[in-house]
Every structure is written in C-alpha cells, then in structure tokens.
Image (cartoon, rainbow over all chains, first blue to last red; front, side, top):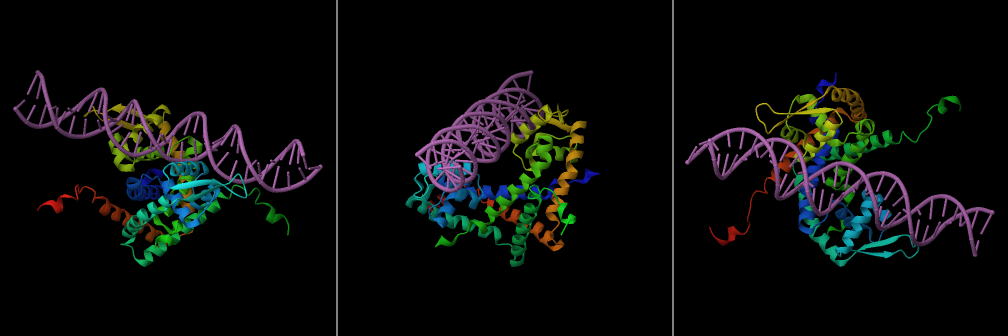
Length: 162
Length: 162
DNA sequence: CCGTCATCGTTGCAGGTGCAAAGGGTCGCC
DNA sequence: GGCGACCCTTTGCACCTGCAACGATGACGG
C-alpha cells in the first residue's frame, strides 16, 4: 500500500531539512562571529524592537519556550549584551533591555543577516515570494485548526437545538 | 538604519517556526504512539524503501549526521524494529534492515502521517503547491551556491603577492 | 489582614545533538 | 607480507532543549 512513500517529497521532511540548512547558514553570521545561539539572536532582535520587556513577552513574541528564553537571557547578560532589572509595577516581572554593547552587536550582525536573506531570495520572482509567503500562512492556519480541535469537546450540540 | 527589522517577516525565522510546528504536530503520530524520534522515523522510512543499507547510506539519503543515525539505529535495534549485521563484502559496513515488527510499525504509522500531511495541504491550490515546491528547491540551490564559497581559505594572500 | 489561587521566572533532570577523536576494518603499495 | 592511508561506525564530551516542579510575587475574596 504505502510502499511508494517518498521521504524526499514529504512536506514535513522538506521543511525540516530546508529550515535546518538555512539556520546553519545563518549561524555563520551571528553564531560564528558573536557566539550567539538562535535563541539569543531572537531575544536580541526582539529587544531592539520592543525596548524593555519581560520573559513572558519574549516567549510569546518570538516562539521560544520560557525556559529557553530564561537561559538565553542569562547568557546574554553574562556576555554584557543585555541587562535585567526587577519590574517596577510588578515584582515578578523582569525588565530586560539591550545594553549599548548589545545594540552594537546587532548593528554588526543585522546587515550580514539581511544580506544572506537577500541572497536566498534573489532568485525568486515576485510571484514566487508572494505565494510562498501565503502558503506558509495557510499552513499555520491548518495547524491551528487541527491542533485546536482538541479543546472542543462535543461537536454534537449544534444539531440538537437552535 | 535597521530599526525596521521585523523578525516575523524574516525568512529563516518563518521557516524555523513553521518547521517546528509541523514536526511537533507530526510527532503525535509516530512519537506518541510508537515512541519514535524524528531520526528514528526517518531511518525506518528509508529502510522500507532501500532494503538493506549502511549507516553512511542513511546519512546521505535522509539528511542526518552519522552519529545521529548510529544512535537512532541502536535505539531501533533495542526496540526490535531493526536488525544489524556486518556487511558481507566489507567488514566495515553495517547491514541494517527492517524487522517484521519494524514493517508493521510503519504500516501503522504511515497512513496517519500521510493523513496529517494531506490535511495540511488540503487548503492549498494546485498552483500554490507547485510554486511552494519550486521555491523550496530554489532555496536549496541558493544555499548550494553560497555554501560552496567556504572552501576558499585565506583572504589575506591576494593582497600580499601575485 | 490572611488564606488561596494564579502568574512569572528559574532550575533539576533526562534526553537529544554536533563535533571531534577514537576504534576497527580495508586497500594499495612497497 | 607488512605498513600506512583511508573509510565506516561508534563513542566521549559539552551543550542545548523540553518538561515539570519549585520559589517568589501579586491578585482576589472573606
């Protein structure tokens, strides 16, 4: 039956392989030159855009688990790229912000990273880019639907009454 | 300058987030039900298609590091889904093949996995699928070109002499 | 004011991963 | 036949990750 299954045309496989390769290519820019991991890089970028934020903010905005964020921030702090303070209003929150050093590092890294992205995209037509982007969004929608089927308990009730 | 950088529209980020989500969704099928990791799943699938192969074969065909393959095979062996033997012609090679149990497990898993993929793709038009696939290939080509620049060793020598 | 519960962040733990070095085997060449 | 270069696979190590449990803090109700 499924004798003909081909991994090389299997969507999750293709996505995983491509994503890994791209990440690896990218890590040359922010990893090799500044010793940053993916998590650390994402945190830095988000800090630049958001100013002063909590771990929870980062978690939701850059798709990283809170423990991952926590450890990334700790490493960045000991590298001097980030500083932490207790939140003023709420003592549970941690106010994380970029240091000047962190900003400088980003200034270093961003052009390189954007250059790599541009090279990757350079052979694509405008239509290809647009469709590619749309498909990614559609896949997220599909994942939302499938995943969120769990919470919904009984689909029966809509037939029972008005 | 780069104040306007948006992680959410950054290609490597989008790919990574999507790929992670899809993998996670998929692991429900082969992970939760059979206790398989991604590496193990890929090895099984390749074995079904290729029959009897070596670690090196798997490594190149399913994009896994050799150490990852080695450990995946070890786990699969102790789970009884795979068997190992020394290669006949070459004593260095390991002849890895599916056991009957392994084949049965795949028979279980494959329909589920294909169903998930089908759901993901179900909202895409034929054109979207085709473009998406083409873009993935183009990105690989771009990575090949960029990556192979590496071998160039010393940027210093071109200034020093002829 | 105090008890209970939710929220935030950190940490312990078990496992997975990449890299590099170590086994073990093969082949060609002297 | 023996030696050294090479190849295939495993393993040691350091690191990263997810999950779950934990301590700390705030919010709410009695």
